[in-house]
Amino acid sequence: MKGFQYGRVPRKAAGLWFGVGLAGTLFAVCGAQAAGHGPVRVKGTKPPLVLRQYGRVTYLEGSGLKLALTHPGVRPQGLNAPFGAAQVFAKPGHVLIFTDSFASNPGNVQGECGASETGERYLHVLALGQPKETLSVLVESCWLNMVPAHAPKWDAAAGTVTVDLLSNDKGPLHSVYRVGADGAVKH
Image (cartoon, rainbow, N blue to C red):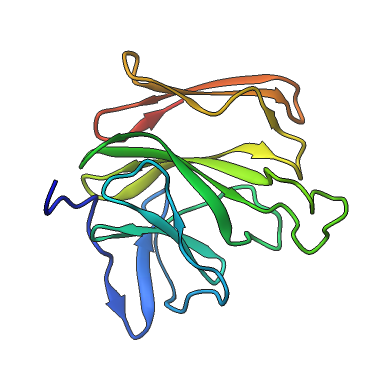
């Protein structure tokens, strides 16, 4: 796969990175990486992709791609730097599905999710033709008592990713997201 690129690099001007959010919204953030937070490799991606935290924004980077990720529904203090990420499915040049994980409350090591191994986990779907995030959904949360039945499951024949929660604020939940060949998502 020599020369393969997941997507395009966003423009950089005057120390700012510009990115496109879920609804196609253009935004800019400072280009300085958060101190003490190195890259986290997205397990299973080839060529390798990493997550990097710049301030309160997490970026997916690698092979010419730098894409800001959204994390809807986070608490007011925002996200901590990611500690883990894993690929669920990839079709090079078209779609990437992966999860990323964050500590829930690292400032409180005894209780209120401070000692949680799992923390908060999000599922992301990225369209790679014109790189953009088409889905970002919380699938596990110590803070909100969201307990997954299993990791998000990809069904290649149906073109769907399934999220099953044993508990959340509404009880058990079963969600199926249809992912098109171009990365577009329908719920």
